Length: 170
Image (cartoon, rainbow, N blue to C red; front, side, top):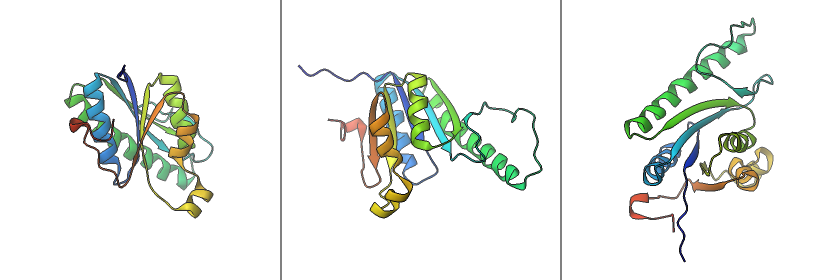
Protein backbone atom coordinates (compact mmCIF):
# COMPACT_ATOMS: atom_id res chain seq x y z
CA UNK A 1 0.00 0.00 0.00
CA UNK A 2 1.47 3.34 -1.06
CA UNK A 3 0.29 5.92 1.43
CA UNK A 4 0.88 9.50 0.34
CA UNK A 5 2.44 11.92 2.79
CA UNK A 6 0.14 14.73 3.87
CA UNK A 7 2.02 17.89 4.68
CA UNK A 8 -0.49 20.48 5.89
CA UNK A 9 1.92 22.87 7.61
CA UNK A 10 5.15 23.53 5.76
CA UNK A 11 7.92 25.63 7.27
CA UNK A 12 10.45 26.90 4.74
CA UNK A 13 13.71 28.26 6.14
CA UNK A 14 15.28 30.81 3.84
CA UNK A 15 18.37 32.99 3.82
CA UNK A 16 19.89 35.41 1.31
CA UNK A 17 21.71 32.90 -0.87
CA UNK A 18 21.42 31.76 -4.48
CA UNK A 19 19.81 28.51 -3.31
CA UNK A 20 16.87 30.32 -1.72
CA UNK A 21 14.95 30.75 -4.97
CA UNK A 22 15.06 26.97 -5.56
CA UNK A 23 14.11 26.15 -1.97
CA UNK A 24 11.29 28.69 -1.90
CA UNK A 25 9.91 27.63 -5.30
CA UNK A 26 9.83 24.04 -4.07
CA UNK A 27 8.00 25.11 -0.92
CA UNK A 28 5.44 27.08 -2.94
CA UNK A 29 4.83 24.19 -5.32
CA UNK A 30 4.51 21.66 -2.53
CA UNK A 31 2.23 23.95 -0.48
CA UNK A 32 -0.07 24.33 -3.50
CA UNK A 33 -0.07 20.62 -4.23
CA UNK A 34 -0.75 19.67 -0.60
CA UNK A 35 -3.11 22.63 0.04
CA UNK A 36 -0.89 23.41 3.00
CA UNK A 37 -0.27 26.43 5.17
CA UNK A 38 3.19 27.94 4.77
CA UNK A 39 5.50 29.52 7.33
CA UNK A 40 8.45 31.44 5.93
CA UNK A 41 11.27 31.70 8.47
CA UNK A 42 14.45 33.71 8.31
CA UNK A 43 16.95 33.43 11.15
CA UNK A 44 19.38 36.21 11.92
CA UNK A 45 22.41 35.14 13.91
CA UNK A 46 22.03 36.00 17.56
CA UNK A 47 23.51 39.44 18.14
CA UNK A 48 24.02 40.84 21.63
CA UNK A 49 22.19 37.94 23.22
CA UNK A 50 18.75 38.91 21.94
CA UNK A 51 16.55 35.94 21.09
CA UNK A 52 12.93 35.43 20.23
CA UNK A 53 10.46 36.39 17.55
CA UNK A 54 10.24 39.95 16.37
CA UNK A 55 6.77 41.15 15.58
CA UNK A 56 6.34 43.26 12.49
CA UNK A 57 6.64 46.80 13.78
CA UNK A 58 8.80 48.74 16.18
CA UNK A 59 11.52 47.36 18.41
CA UNK A 60 9.44 47.83 21.59
CA UNK A 61 10.41 51.50 21.89
CA UNK A 62 13.93 51.14 23.26
CA UNK A 63 16.92 53.01 21.92
CA UNK A 64 20.62 52.41 22.08
CA UNK A 65 23.75 54.52 21.91
CA UNK A 66 25.67 51.53 20.48
CA UNK A 67 26.40 52.12 16.75
CA UNK A 68 26.16 48.35 16.21
CA UNK A 69 22.53 48.49 17.26
CA UNK A 70 21.65 50.66 14.27
CA UNK A 71 23.29 48.23 11.88
CA UNK A 72 21.31 45.48 13.61
CA UNK A 73 18.11 47.53 13.26
CA UNK A 74 18.86 48.09 9.56
CA UNK A 75 19.39 44.34 9.03
CA UNK A 76 16.09 43.69 10.81
CA UNK A 77 14.28 46.12 8.51
CA UNK A 78 15.90 44.54 5.43
CA UNK A 79 14.89 41.06 6.64
CA UNK A 80 11.30 42.21 7.15
CA UNK A 81 11.13 43.71 3.65
CA UNK A 82 12.66 40.58 2.14
CA UNK A 83 10.22 38.32 3.99
CA UNK A 84 7.27 40.48 2.97
CA UNK A 85 8.32 40.03 -0.68
CA UNK A 86 8.32 36.22 -0.28
CA UNK A 87 5.06 36.39 1.66
CA UNK A 88 3.43 38.30 -1.18
CA UNK A 89 4.59 35.70 -3.72
CA UNK A 90 2.84 32.99 -1.68
CA UNK A 91 -0.29 35.07 -1.16
CA UNK A 92 -0.48 35.72 -4.92
CA UNK A 93 -0.80 31.93 -5.27
CA UNK A 94 -3.56 31.85 -2.61
CA UNK A 95 -1.38 29.90 -0.18
CA UNK A 96 -2.26 30.63 3.46
CA UNK A 97 1.04 32.08 4.61
CA UNK A 98 2.72 33.72 7.55
CA UNK A 99 6.29 34.75 8.11
CA UNK A 100 8.71 35.66 10.84
CA UNK A 101 12.33 36.31 11.49
CA UNK A 102 14.04 35.31 14.66
CA UNK A 103 17.41 35.76 16.27
CA UNK A 104 19.53 32.88 17.45
CA UNK A 105 21.29 29.75 16.35
CA UNK A 106 19.68 28.88 12.98
CA UNK A 107 19.45 25.10 13.49
CA UNK A 108 17.90 25.28 16.95
CA UNK A 109 15.65 28.18 15.94
CA UNK A 110 14.29 26.31 12.91
CA UNK A 111 13.56 23.21 15.02
CA UNK A 112 11.94 25.19 17.84
CA UNK A 113 9.82 27.29 15.51
CA UNK A 114 8.67 24.22 13.56
CA UNK A 115 7.67 22.45 16.76
CA UNK A 116 5.86 25.47 18.23
CA UNK A 117 4.03 26.13 14.95
CA UNK A 118 3.14 22.46 14.48
CA UNK A 119 4.94 22.00 11.16
CA UNK A 120 4.56 18.67 9.40
CA UNK A 121 7.49 19.42 7.07
CA UNK A 122 10.58 21.63 7.11
CA UNK A 123 12.18 22.58 3.80
CA UNK A 124 15.65 24.11 3.81
CA UNK A 125 18.77 24.30 1.69
CA UNK A 126 22.19 22.82 2.25
CA UNK A 127 25.30 24.51 0.98
CA UNK A 128 28.31 22.26 0.61
CA UNK A 129 30.88 24.17 2.64
CA UNK A 130 33.57 21.56 2.99
CA UNK A 131 34.45 19.32 5.90
CA UNK A 132 36.77 21.78 7.67
CA UNK A 133 34.33 24.69 7.50
CA UNK A 134 31.48 22.45 8.63
CA UNK A 135 33.55 21.20 11.56
CA UNK A 136 34.05 24.75 12.85
CA UNK A 137 30.70 26.30 11.96
CA UNK A 138 28.43 23.27 12.03
CA UNK A 139 25.76 22.45 9.54
CA UNK A 140 22.31 23.93 9.98
CA UNK A 141 20.72 21.26 7.82
CA UNK A 142 22.49 18.48 9.75
CA UNK A 143 21.23 19.90 13.03
CA UNK A 144 17.67 20.18 11.73
CA UNK A 145 17.64 16.64 10.30
CA UNK A 146 18.76 15.23 13.65
CA UNK A 147 16.65 17.39 15.98
CA UNK A 148 13.40 18.23 14.16
CA UNK A 149 10.18 16.64 15.38
CA UNK A 150 8.75 16.46 11.84
CA UNK A 151 9.87 15.43 8.36
CA UNK A 152 12.70 17.42 6.77
CA UNK A 153 13.41 18.01 3.09
CA UNK A 154 16.95 19.21 2.43
CA UNK A 155 17.74 20.69 -0.97
CA UNK A 156 21.41 20.50 -1.89
CA UNK A 157 22.89 23.36 -3.86
CA UNK A 158 23.54 21.23 -6.93
CA UNK A 159 20.09 19.64 -7.09
CA UNK A 160 17.38 20.68 -9.47
CA UNK A 161 13.93 19.62 -8.42
CA UNK A 162 10.84 19.91 -10.55
CA UNK A 163 7.90 19.05 -8.33
CA UNK A 164 5.35 19.40 -11.14
CA UNK A 165 6.93 16.39 -12.86
CA UNK A 166 7.44 14.51 -9.61
CA UNK A 167 11.23 14.61 -9.69
CA UNK A 168 12.97 14.43 -6.36
CA UNK A 169 9.97 13.44 -4.29
CA UNK A 170 9.64 9.70 -4.97
